[in-house]
Length: 363
Image (cartoon, rainbow, N blue to C red):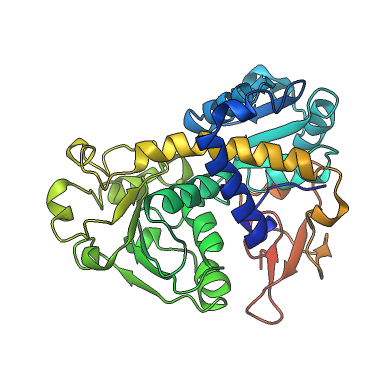
């Protein structure tokens, strides 16, 4: 079974196949108007979403399919204590593909482990958001024309920003990519991302504390909001929430061909005077999201019964039941019946990381 839980579940070739199909869908919308006739997408959204949920809904409807599901877990049997695994088994009786957003990190993986239909991770806590990554890649392709030889700056919340983590993983497969990390100390990219993704793949990166010092060198500026919902300490959130604000004056030294991306929603990190700048691509990015999700749905349904396209859900060398994850948001700590699983650390010999959320075990 082919699922999409993490961007690395897709090979570079599969990713580009989806991007190419999305480009064809954009050019030939009517050709795909009934491509999913008779098929049903279940949207299981355990936390609030506007763009992603409506994007999936619009995508399936424009493919001629139907949509069922929920946008508030309190209106489902989850409010009665039903586990993610059991909900998945139930939905398997009604739908052909699942798109799940969940506040528990690793929830989409647990769903895939209990599913006989494809599962799409539409965001699991601060862990990963692979369909936003496909959206970002399609936007870069349409706006810049290439993935190789890019200098991309990630600004804002790099610690909890699942979109940032996912996009860096995807771009790590291309030549000549350079990463600039623009964040306050409290919100820097996690060490495991720097070591296991950037350093392990030979991606040059540097960390800076202001937009102005790196603006002239960027091909893409990826802005993010500081996410209050990811903070356990509200005082810490208040200290960093306004650290980086992009306005027109800061774009004075940017390349004319540079593009600004943002997964949205924004709060105040991009002022409205930037919206009319031709370099601002974030609303075009939303439209790209719908079309790339169309392509993804079609490909997962096509690959469903192809044994060569199966997703490895449990890494080689995984140890079960021995360790406890230190992350309080990890599904292994939040749901009954979820067995702890830890894989060997790709960089540090003798160390392990949680299969669900990438955290280290409790000491």
